[in-house]
Image (cartoon, rainbow, N blue to C red; front, top):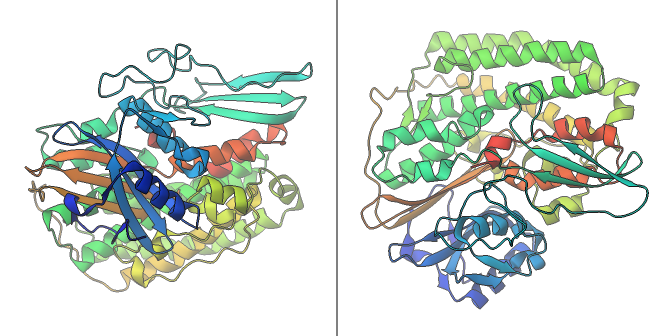
Length: 506
């Protein structure tokens, strides 16, 4: 532990304060932490001003954030051999920088792009950068085995993603998920030299459209730490309310989708309408239904006055009884429970090994909630929600959503009752950032832990901007949930996780 720097959420520190260990010490320190109730928040590489490759990790252990780093050669012993929590992170580093994690158990590309350093790719001749999905999938042999391929092109407006099921009859033996078909280069846009800082929030809130508040909040807090900006209490309340409205709208929408997947139309129709009502409350605050443009470094861009506050509170009061009644209907119907219970189970042990976050982790018995462990904005005054069902199945993931909806409905009016005026930012500000600095921000968006990490160079320019969406942790959880399930259970399992393609495809 003495080789790990403990920092606070949103605390800017000097880059020189991050321990720079030799790889053996780095490996031992990181594995000791993660194998003893520790989890990975960030694990990434960057090139410093001398073009040397550096590795940085941010770990969490209960309410502690721990940082350490080391120099990175073109190959290193994979940490995933001993700790599955590093699996996706190491694949990402391999793709971005042409670095090989030796003996990685499942080394595959994530997002189909040439590495940043112009090095030969490390994935072998069976992989083709410009042909997404052109690599050998995991195979299961046997006369009774067949494969079912879904995507990458889907109906409607779903982003591209490929699901390959290896089945024995109707039973799924393995599901392999491949994403990254339209790699957008969001991190590279955020690092672009010469870009005005007031353009960055527009990119940050577009990382995942349904998590505009979650990502813009992480970005704003990071810039505030590096620029020394203060945020007034009124703005912190509004930012908190916006995040909770985003949570309600998305959870309600997913309860509608789960109802639809089991052909239970009354809750599907009711929750579908309710989702629109709460999106409209974001419209009341920000002028659009996804809250874009509201959260900005230094506070909020729009005043939310007494009239808007009254609209929000009255709508919550009006809609809460109906939400309670329809939730009671959904979760008491024996036909619903027959489909939800014991379907798509991820045990606590497996969830812990994979490092699941958010409601997916809590539904499997992992209590972590960033609003409690690393509270920002007005969350320090919020009572923690309790989860009564944590068996890791579809029913648990749906029940945790229900509990969070009710928790947010109770919390928002209490916040708005403080009646603290938020001073709107009159003009999008451009700020200078502290030089040679490092900051990491963590927030509990509706899917779970969102984190943004920034490093600046000696001139205060952004040297590395690392984004982590909760889906990065949880896609593997969806794959595991289908093992030994009927393939017809896939839509139900998929909706119960409802992970982000674009949040993953950075």
